[in-house]
Amino acid sequence: MNGNNTRYFCYQEEHLLIIGDIWLTNQTQLYFELDLNSEYEFKNEFIVIFKLWSKLGIDCLNLLQGMFAFAIWNKQEQNFFLVRDGVGSRTLYFCQQGGNFYIAPRLKTLLPFHSKELNLVALRDYLTCSFIPG
Image (tube, rainbow, N blue to C red; front, top):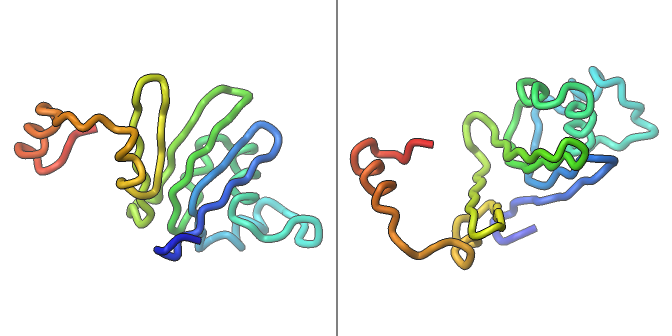
């Protein structure tokens, strides 16, 4: 738990690693739809997402309701996803420096890993569009 009362957890099973802050409003519904045995598995958002991802892959994201920001690494398929809820209630930032890729829930965490040079193209885009196109 950090000073902002945000929870960050890590869950790893088989070929998937999930790390982030997840609060699902439809967790119980998904729990029953997945037919998880409540005596065998404790109710946990990470287990629900693991089971959904194992069953449906990236399409499972359409079923998630709530506030979340997480990263998921599939060792078997060698792919990596950053996921946020549609409203963006949980923040998630990333940067790439050299051959390394960094992610964090707070922008200031990434400052030591990010270039201090001003990106003039991004500044132009921001001043023109009021956002930086992705």
